[in-house]
View 1 (cartoon, rainbow, N blue to C red):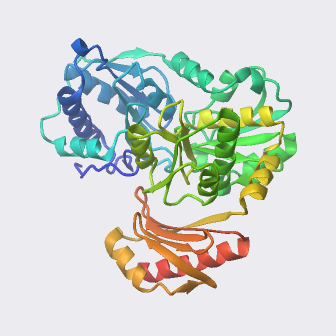
View 2: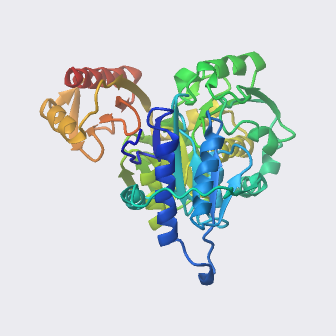
Length: 469
């Protein structure tokens, strides 16, 4: 069944056998081939025009990827197909030098019934203006899939290991004592921590290949990392890491099993990079991100820019400007010196380096940041939407219902950059926005206390629920 194909916050995703079908994958692959043939640099320019195609552990990802690669090859494109499942960040890293374009079959953190395709260019997600060019080419030409045009398969994981090793001090990490707990969530990052840290004592969860994710959702958020918490406590681990389905997003639990929100984790990481690695430049964060990174940036005279939700919007700014650090609320981080894309493994390794260099436990690192820059309690609630939500109409109707005070906090500013965001006098905020990848409306809030944050979240959820009725 041919359906409309549109890129969301990161790539195109759909339900397998409903809209993610061979027919639709072939249509998109042909559009990608047409785009490559019209835009790739010529070999005479001394630049590569090669394309890499990877895939994750999801149902039939390897077969869909093989067809994508075969269609590219049928269109006379120099293409290499991975010979094994790989994390999405590896594809991004390969497009820094060895390949012009990277394509990976994955649906990231979506449930098992989904699959999708992400496209990487220049070390990050393809910009919106370029994905729109690809969308315009869909059905522009008949799908060309010639018999026998199978792409060359290669194992390029050694290049990714070398890249990751260049970002951190592995020798310093090796000085850490204790157990590291890791939940791979049956995703494409499976086994990588052991490969990179051969001498470390690692306890791994969900490290087999299961395209159903054993009924779990491969999203390293607090509600999905309960087993990792139990493992940390049982094994007395020094830290716990969770990775999503394609390894680009990351979650962290401290040595007490407490989930560290991405808002706090970003603040701890940024603080370390500034003070110990002398990071300088602009800080870019999505509209759903907390205020602590902003406070840290201000304290070090670093400019701050807020962008729409979706790391591709962060990456676009990083590609065009001198950006030091980019972050999104969903657990995606990038900084100067590496690819301008999310990389869960790079963040986990840097977190270990941070612990080794500072000689502090994860809880101590968090306490230090909160003491220096103030408390920040973040929370999010997802509300199911029975039908698509028109964002402009949603924002307009909710805006009219906003009072001047919410939960005894005075409204200071309103932003419609991405959904409806309300700022209060002392950095507190409330955001309500339709998801770009799922049939949900997300409500986010942050304040200095749990009570105030919950009050904001309750108000936002009630307002959104009244709209969805």
